[in-house]
Image (cartoon, rainbow, N blue to C red; front, side):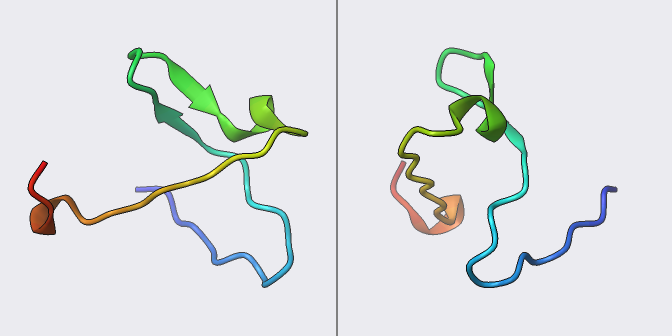
Length: 48
């Protein structure tokens, strides 16, 4: 398991990748210079 650290307030977000709805991985670094909204939710407590 990869160990992660919590970034300092005001620091840039660390690079990471996540699968998109298109089944392709999207890297945060590829979106540099664009506005990005990250939405995290607990699946267990949602209807979806």
